Amino acid sequence: MQGIGAAENARAMKHTKHATRTGLAVLGAAAAAGLVAGLAVSRPGRRGVHMASEPLLGDWLDVIKAEHLEVLDVLERLIATQSRATAKRKALLARLKLLLTKHAAEEENVVYPTLRGADSAAEAEVLIAEHALVKTALLELELMAPDDAAFMPRLRALQAELEAHMHKEETEIFPQLRKTLSPEADQQLTTLMLREGRLFV
Image (cartoon, one colour):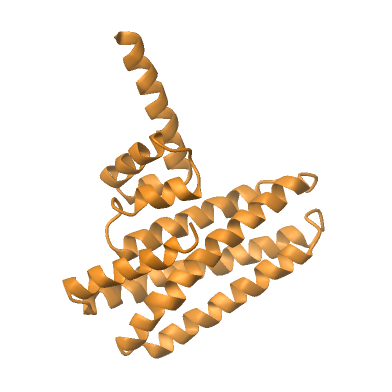
């Protein structure tokens, strides 16, 4: 029995390290522990993270923060690649595009319209314009050879753009929006956003 317990502890530690590396552990001990439990029963990956995070991370803003962390993790891994690792760069860039496409759909089709309805149309338009810049950067990166000398500077510029955009959403715009919502409206926004995201799973 002790051998089984040791094996389970080793597996738990492995998944805990994975959760910490992806940044999800900073969302709180309970959420991270629940996410690790979810990952333990499925292969780590987009579907596993998405399915495990839905019931555990709270409302729509908590899910958005988790998705931001996942995007930034992929970006960091892409930035850490060597220019000769062209296949890895292509794979990580494809992963980044998939994550951002899903995330943009959730925000543009659900969260930003809610923001407009809360008399914050100007802020919504700014955020949409920033999404357009991100999509342009992704296309530019896709059109480049992965070992192009311009690849990494463009990628670092995209990272800076995304970090500024995410910070503004997480610390200013979205917390203010959440304050304006009733508990029922908050739950409805969460439900609609998760439903939108499932279209990409």
